[in-house]
Structures are given as C-alpha cells and as structure tokens.
Length: 633
Image 1 (cartoon, rainbow, N blue to C red):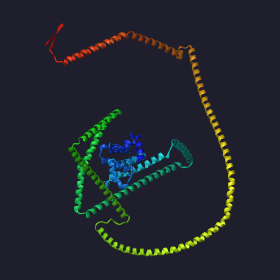
Image 2: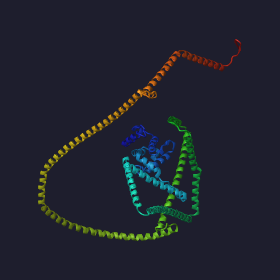
Image 3: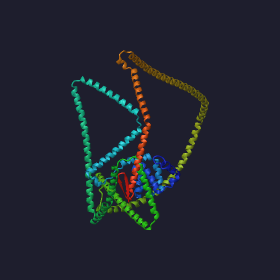
Image 4: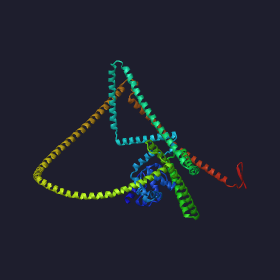
C-alpha cells in the first residue's frame, strides 16, 4: 500500500499535474479534495471531464466517473460482486476506492488517452427501433455506421504507418525507382508505337482498343451500380420484414390483452409523459437555454489577453474564498430553525434526485425492453426463415404445457429404467475388478520375464562398454593438443586483426590529410582569384587617373572620395557653428525658461486664491472705483 501511495504522489508531482504533494499531505486530503484530484487525472485523459466537482451533485459526479471508468475498462478490485459498495465509495470519496483508481490511471495515461479519443467516435448511438422505421433516419444511421467503420480502417492504417518506421530516404528511393520505371514505360510505349506504325490500319485498331477499354470500364461501373441496387433492395426487404413482424406482434398483443390492462398501461404512459413534459423536459430546456445564453455572452465578448485572464482568475479565487468564509460563518451560527429547514431541503432534494433517477431508469428499461423485443422479433423471423417453430402464445402455450406433462410421466418411467440399469452396471463393475486382479497377476509374471531378458542384454553390452572406455581415454589424450592448436590460431587471428586495425587507421589519417590539402588548395585558389580581380581593378583605376578626358577622370574612385571628403568637411564646419551658437545662447534661454515657470506658478496661485474666495461665504460686497477699492459690510 505504501508503494502504491509513493507512486501516486510521485506521478501527481510531475507534469502536467504539479500538485506538490507528499505522503502526509496526500493521505490527509478530504474526500472532496481526493475526488477533485481523481477528476483532474480523468481530465488529463479526457478534457471533457475538466470541471469543478463542487458545481455538480455527488450522484452526477459518481455517475460521470463510473461511466468514464467503464469506458476505459477499469475493473474494481472486488469484482462484479461489490459493484454497489464501489459506487458508494466513489460517491463519498473513500480512500480504499479512489487510491487504486488513481494508481491504475497514472500507470497507463497514454494508453487511456488513446482509448478515450477512440471512444468519442466508436461508441455507437442507441437509436430506438420506432425511430428507425423512418427512411431518412434509417439512411442517416446507416451512413453513421459506415463512417464509424471508415474511421476504424483509417485509424488502423495510421497506426500501421506510425509503426512501420518509413524514413524519408526510403521514400526518396521509391520515388527515384518509380521515376525510372516511368521512363522505361515511356520508352517502351514509344517502341510499341514505332512497331504499330508499320502495321496497316493501326489507327483503326487503336480506336477499337480504346473503345474496348471504355466498354470494360462502363461494364465495371454498371456492375457496381447493380450491386448497390441489390444492397438497397435487400435493405428495403429487411425493413418490410421488420414492419410486418411489428404489425403481427401488435395484432397479437391487441388480441391477447384485456381492456383493463390496456387502460392501466396507457395511464402509466400518460403519467410518465406528463412528468417528462411538465417537469423534466422544461428544466432541461431551461438549463440548456442558460448554457446557450452564457456561451453567446462569452462569444460576443472580445478576446482576452493573458493579463486579463490572470485578473479574472484572481477574482474567481477571491470570490471562492469569500463563499467558503460565508459557508463557515453559516455553519458556526448553528441556528436550529435553519438546521431543520436545511434538513427538509436536503430531504426534498434527495426525493427529487431519486425521482429523476427512477425516471431515467424507467426510460433506460423501456429502451432495453424495446431492444429486447426487437432482438426477439429478429430471432423469431430468423427461426421462421430457417424452418423453425413459431413463437407460441395463449392457448397454444396451454396445450404445450399439457403435452409437456405427458412427457414428464414418460420421463419418470425412463428414469426408473435408468436406475435399474445402474444396479446392473454395479454388478458388471465388480466382475471387471475381479478380472483386473487376475490380469495383474499375469502382468507380474511378464515383468519377471522382462527382467531376465534385460540381464541377458546387459551381459551382451559389456564388451561394447569396454571399447567405449578406450575411446574416451583417447579423446582425453587428444583434447590438450586440440586446445593448444586452438590457442595458436587465436593468437595468430588477434595479430592479424591488430595489423588490420593499424592499416585502417593509417588509411583514415591519409584520407583526412588529403581532404585538408584539397580544402587548402581550394582556399588558395580562391584567394588568388580575389587578388587578381583586385589587381585588375587597381590597374583600371590607374588608367582612369592617367586619362586626359575630364569626364572619364570624374568616374574614378579617387575623385569621388575627394569630393565626399570635401562635402563632409563643409558639413562639419556648419555643425561647429551651430554648437557655438547654442553655447552662447544657453544662459539667456535658461533665464527665460525660469521666468516662464515663475509666471506659471504665480498664475496657479492666483487661481487657487480665487477658487478659495468663491467657496467662502461673502461677508460684504466690494465697490471698485477709479484708483480705489471699498469693502461695504
């Protein structure tokens, strides 16, 4: 058990889980946390399972996990006899149930990922038989089955290609070989054309051969169409046969049943359908609408970046902590009235869940009953096609019971005869034992005779054994000489091998020196070509400088460099003058900037004083005149 826990903790601390557990913290996890850890492991296998188990009911969590484990072919340790205890342990998060599941999952994650991926496409949908009576649904279901079969074949080919280990070199060699074959075929066709051109009416013969090929292709397509029409006819006959069987069964059921049973069954159907229409389906529809509304809201919002996602995650974490604190406060209050109400609420929720589960079980039972009836109809039709007996009902079954009672009396008589035969068999068995004892006495005499014959054979073989001893002694004398010769051979082979390795090393060193010399030769050759090109360029420039034509001399590099130098010197003079002007005007500009800043500060101060005066209550009013201001209270 400790090894199992060590393995689980080690795997959960690795990628992609990164749980940072140790044996103590993992063993002290609460049932809800342990179930969340199991759900994270299942989400790594199937991304659809990545949900928070606190947002769903415990029964739904257990059902979802149990379904996925069944799809992954997990077998509980106790076998099928303890399925109910396994379900209960999975609901409450029991360690003896969850730990083996984690150990089994973490051992084979890649294999289970592949199995979960395939299950998304290979687990067939169960369509009721009454829906398959519709031609459109039946055809769609047939196409669905064909797509499932095609997916199986394509996946198998993909796995074979992955395991075949094809390399690009092999594919290139195949391409080269196919190109060579193509060239050979082209040449062969050209040779055949040349041969055919010598034959009279070769164009007419080619045209007839082309028409023959077209007719053969048409014949193949017509055969394919014929096979498809046969398949469609066979499917239509099967559909007709199913309809006839269903009609006959309905007629028999209507003939056998009474009005009271029909009314009772119809009342049950009405109750079930009214519950589905009034409670279950509206609730599911409302939940679906909420999900669609939420998804539309999410789709309408712009795409979020990493920083916004982190901010949302932080808000979610803070909200969850606040919810946990509120729950703890509510539990700390322990109001007896609230406890009673919560008890009633829990009981009501349990009753509602039980009702929903019973409805689902009833629906599954009905589907199973329909499947069994469909299978029964198919078996009965197959039995009738093979000439078997028809399925009996009603009065025929009573007659069959009476017939079986007569056969039962016959069986009892035969059983009494068998008992008498058993007594006779006991007498015969005793007789056989007596005869066997007599036979063993005869066998003992035979054994004595065989022993005497064996003694005679041993005396006859004694001289041969003496010769064998002499041969063994000779072999012992020759064995050292053989070992000596073998040692000489081994030393000679080792010397030759060492000489060969030395020669191979010398050859390898000489090849490396040859490669170095070749690379050096190519390097020197390139340097020589570069030097020659530079010398040619220098000669061309000297000719241009010595030329008397002014237009030609302007194209020389020397003239261009002199002009560029003069231009850069004039640009440097202009820049130095600008630097001088900036240095001379620095102090006046700084004083001016300081004065502007002081002015800005003064205006800001006046603004603050004005705002402060406006905010205070007026004590009097001010009279302004030429050259004087007066305050009147």
